Amino acid sequence: MIQHRMLSKEDEVAAGGEENEVRREDQEKINRFSRLHQRESMLEEQLKAKQKDKEDLEEISTELELADEDELVPYKIGDSFFQLPLEEAQSLLSTSTDQIDSDVSRLEESLEEIREELQQLKVSLYARFGRSINLEV
Amino acid sequence: MADTKTVSSQHTQTNPRGIPVAPFIDDVSDYVSSRAEVESTLRSFQEMISKYQFMELNTQRRGAGLREKIPDIKKTLEMVRFLKLRRENTSSELTTHFELNDTLYARASIYPADTEEVYLWLGANVMLAYPIDEAETMLQEKLSAAESSLANCEEDLEFLREQITTLEVATARVYNWDVVQRRKEKAEGKGGDEDEGNAAKGLAQA
Image (cartoon, rainbow over all chains, first blue to last red):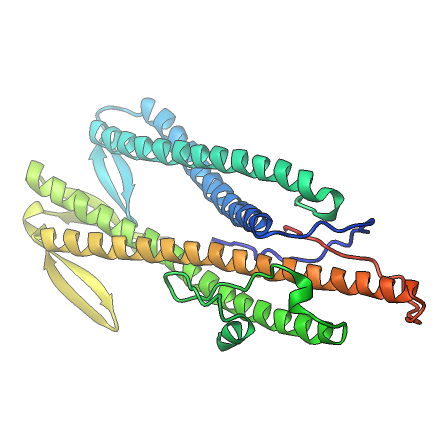
């Protein structure tokens, strides 16, 4: 939720000799880099939150393994707790777990794709501009 | 936004939400013909950047609001679905601890027969009874709407970032051009400029 604005500041780099002109395709690459970088930060944040939820759910699953079958389990739905038979609670839990598992792997996949493309852009931009451009965080 | 048009009339495209594309400079020397124009050009870039940043801030706020709203809708929807499922499968009563206030829970028994209708808080001090199926549809629609506006927000934020980046690069290029011009003048013995002038062309993330 808290997404920090990326403050841009000009990194001062002494440019030696002839300056490489920025062509439109270069600008597009820089923009793409900038866009993906922003998306990466956002997805990282989402992934972190999901992973925490996932851990919590896993913990609950372990706890429920130990629960007494004859006792009702207070299971939280929305803001309320429902007294449910163990079996029912477990089935609800596994639905949530499956959901979160697929969310997490989806996020991880997109992050991987983004990082790969960022890497390629970095290589090609550094090749063109060398020390005149700074793409590090 | 009108400024963007006057700066470069060939770049009046906008994104789907009507945010204009920042002008790209093909050749700095076409753009700034003398060193006297450098300052005003840089100022106009800065002005555009500020406008984009203002939009960025607003969009971020809107997105944050939606990110808060979506889990709430999801929770309600989850509950409605649960009640519906119970109604279909069992007729026994449901014991619940419901939240009376923060950290204060009370016990209640709900008979599936009583869950024919649910009451949804619509805001503006209005609460309305919905048959459970209609409630589900309504909440599902609200959720999809919120999710698609959030997606738009995120797309806009990425678009805005690109425009700001374009202008930052343009700023660096005009500045560099100025430095090179100054050095030329100096070499020709015209300029009495004291400062060394480090050329800056930077694209910094973070």
